Image (cartoon, chains in turn purple, orange):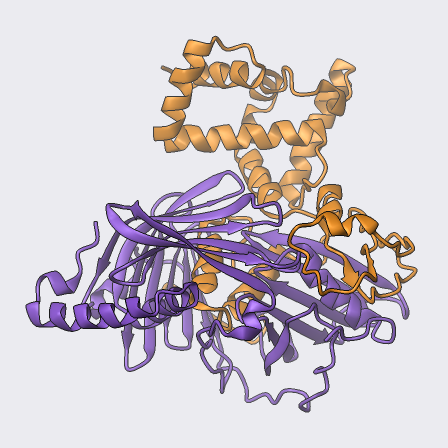
Length: 332
Length: 229
């Protein structure tokens, strides 16, 4: 059950009620999605949810806090591997008891946190947004919103958004046949006013663990703007970020391009001078983790990886365009 | 009930030889018994290996050992492993390869999480505008782009889109070019730019992933290794 802070604080209850009335005045699918993203990015909460994908179910606990725009978050597997990820600002620490290893990743210098998608008219060109109605979920009133792609380059979503908080209580990721390929369902969710630092400490002893810590990524400048800006991408995607960063196991900076259609995001990583391959030889392959698809191609000493929460065909489209720029014209 | 009895029941369930009433009881137990679920998933993956299902890859050294063991057992009995089908694969496994249980667990995890492109995926691939010319490569099938009239049957296709769609060239089974650890690192880097909901789901998938997909490299470059912090 959700235990909102407002239930304990009458003054806040009044403020939230007024805010809710204002929000309901614009009771459109777009407004619900904006509210959901705002809640996810700005509210403090902790909850337990199940993550289902490819027939596997894992129970996870999340604690999420935002102070002055800085997100601190702990994600913990309650069964299975017992892994825990703790994100504090630009630092992500992965506790891997199954590996007896702790990995500390630093965000590259100058990285701007992901902006919240705005569901404007450009998104409507590629997704159809619908409000299905109000249903009970986890004992609360939830607005069910569907995000249906208009082509097969993106996944669809069905979202149960809690009406008073804007939090997604249940989300389904849908393939092009409307088949559910990933599901996240909260079994408990608590909106918190204050979450102490102690709740972000890993609940395990790391004695004897191996720590892998980036030595502070050197200041790396991305390639000149525009160097990769003309990569052919599926309709609706556009370049939103470009950087270069050190990654574990790579001796040289990796160019990182980010493309978005307003909902889905695809990263393209370009790594040079590491691959043994004959001139003109091309190798390619697809891999998937969860709902993320990755398509890799190696050509003439370069490795290209496109990765995102999109169907396999989308990442393949981008890599094929990189391999054959003269043949693949940008479709937008 | 002992583990052996449970193994026997699982085996019978896979072989469609378990009475319906026992099936129901076992299903209930599966729902509440985490270890049994893990065992079920392991057996299902092993069965898929033996059946040689497309789209499953053995990507770890341990998985290679499992495959080799399966082949040896098949040679000993004179039956091709792939010809065993789904019937009777569990008992030979339990009896002959029980010692490899931990290896099987790793293998099962690896093949469940790391999948190469399957024919089904190719079939579902959407049309590509101005499709790239397939290159003469060592793994990509250089199929000529072909127009697809049937695209109009897709109700999601916006009517304003042009008719000049082509189907992407098919991709055959290919070697894994990105190691699981490397892929996990890319996912972590990508997640920093994803929308909040997608970022949470992507990291959830990584947290939920088992040992085959650790987001770390065994011998990282430009990293400090400190033991026993």
